[in-house]
Length: 137
Image (cartoon, rainbow, N blue to C red; front, side):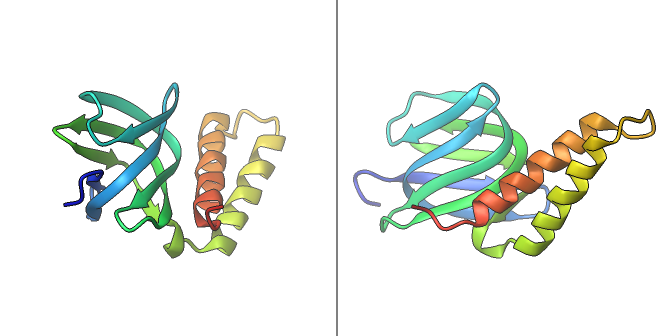
């Protein structure tokens, strides 16, 4: 293990999506982005729908879309328990864009038959998936 790295584990109900040493990460917290580096103070935080960004131990910038959950930082390790998560490289961008368009159309309709809270969450998930699929700057 390099001196400036710590363990990141991203877990969903279906699988362990990622488990490796990283240099830093930024997670979408409920109250804003949370930046984590080695020797961070212990922390438990709720996560929002968004993009989790991290830099591997070899300096490669990566992204994944997550749909909320929790993050625990303790003993130079971070565990993300996400409802869903996808590596940016695995995302079907056309499908994500179609989901975004569907959600936007639902939100335009003013009807009691449309669950607007659910449509807003679908829109947030689609946007997160699109952003996670983009190449890091």
